[in-house]
Image 1 (cartoon, rainbow, N blue to C red):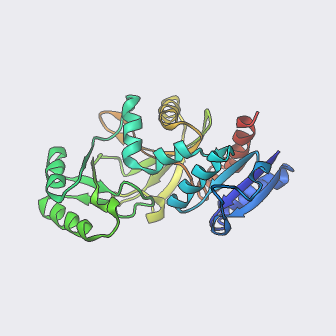
Image 2: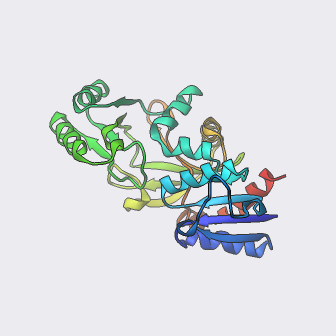
Length: 282
């Protein structure tokens, strides 16, 4: 058994993973994604020595390229390229959830400022506009009225990335000052946290406070259905509590951070990830 862990920066999550592999005497290698070279037409690096590679790249684009190449070499990755590609794109995630009839906020897509304004008025103010690819709450805006919509869409029009010219709009859920982040590892939902904030955005990257959340049968079922819809693996599922519809799946993250969750809850997430890798390789 020989496992590779490819990463961008030695964060606390990667330190915990390396320590867990060392403690369990599992053979592994540390691989910096910034130092990787792939000869696509005639691979000159003996990737076959790896039974599996855990991808911990911070960059979404870099992680997607890595998993595509490694999977093409026949090397299993956690997560797979297919799963990573779906989870990295909010439109693809929305479609995957819709195809499995999984409850989620109403979402619309448009391609011009004019149509985006019309789409937003179909949802009703206030609503949320998000980049189709991104994390940590960056460039996520609440649109309170038409004046705000025109200003936000005008700003996005001049941004250089083509993804900013795809308008992904979502209804604003009246959540109780918090959302839920639950961690799915294979068929288990071992832990969840509330992310609480007075701000409408409840990302811990933006200052939300994490508190423990009990994994109820309802929460476990919702998370497992969502994970199965995108292909399963090691995932963080973000859920919203709607006062009328119950739990709604908001987003699914394929390269999850857990530096606050593990010490808060006492759940050994690194070893659970390793258990999953070993189970997948049986």
